[in-house]
Length: 609
Image (cartoon, rainbow, N blue to C red; front, side, top):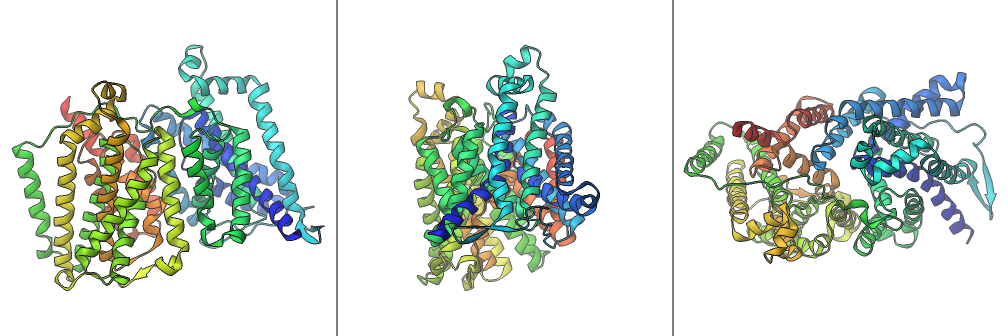
């Protein structure tokens, strides 16, 4: 019994750092309406800067002043990012804001690697809290007791700040009605900057306080941003008490899940997140009206079918690409096959985002289901490549049907967050169901059939399949079904007046997009000869959004062009520099600032003038 009590108290200590990060994320979203994907990067930066400050300034200033000084420095960096980057794109579609913060995350990851190196850094123990005290016969670190007492203090301080100060009144006014606050003369620029700096300070404080308990590593940002999103969604976006309650719930699930349900422990928090979104989309302590705005930011987009000249141009381009084996070697053909596969993956996501008006933060789930379905069909059922690809498509379609049924019943960010939850559940199952999926060892030996084994033939297969599938997606978009989807995307009330039901139509669109993503995933499994859980991960889902947004949501070919550019650039930078994420992140930020509607969308808009 004493062991479980101590385990519960340990979970409370972990909840402190998680609450600090999640509260900052919730505050930033409540005012700016930005899902700040770089929040985990600021948490990581807080840990590293605190390590340096404590090591160099600690002897003169002391442990705590040095740690707080580091958090202030990171908050200043956050304010600079807000003023130079985010302030310029507040009127851009929300997904471009997400893209910008993702670019910042990539850049910070490599900057940390460049400055502090690849080794983990374990910070010193806090003075006065280096020992342990007995609790029911079990020793418990005194530093963890400090963290448990600190979280309620921070919650009360934030409550007083927002309820008892003039600045807090302005923040709450901007949260509820930004237009009215601006009409009353509130300087929103500096208000947003101060809120963003406060949120970043809380994230950095969480990183600094975690330093004596765990080592700082250059990949700690991704895990904490996912957990923070779970906490914020469960508690209710914009609700600080909700974030506190959810942080405790998630931390205790992590603490006891490994003991009670070790086989599904990684999925527990995401299962709870999905249940909360399905039953109470605004969170445990949130308000129903908090998230009514859809995150696409896309207005009515008038797409036209290709004319004769456009069709000839496409045929000519495909013919030129098909001639690549005449001049390219095996490596070039493998890269070209990968680009074709990801062009189809991006086209399927563009069909969902640009065509149906649905945003998915977990589209990689269906790409990965297609890959695992094909691999398992080969390894367990002994099927050939063609029927195995069909199995992958069917598994992805089944996932799209099941998950889509729930996702289309929500709207806006709620729906997008539910796609993320389902994606992480699938990833967790693939990672922990080792008897079937091999866990992190993956499934290997998934090779193409003899007739497609050579790099030339497999390239032609990928080009043909992906070109036909992308063309079919385009045909669907210009069918009556596609026009109905776009009518719902542009104006649901108007579509409803002519008898178009939103949920059945978007459900069908969601399932179709999942099936095409599964086709891309199945081809990818045969290209690589193996499948690993990272094909289901959030980073690949974000990459898909980057591909779509780089090309442009407003243009029908944006996903394909964005996939070729972004994936090709990623492959090139990985082979030419050790800091590929820094280059990719900087270019993503530059593209957001220079081409706020994507490359193709911006170019098309300029030619129409």
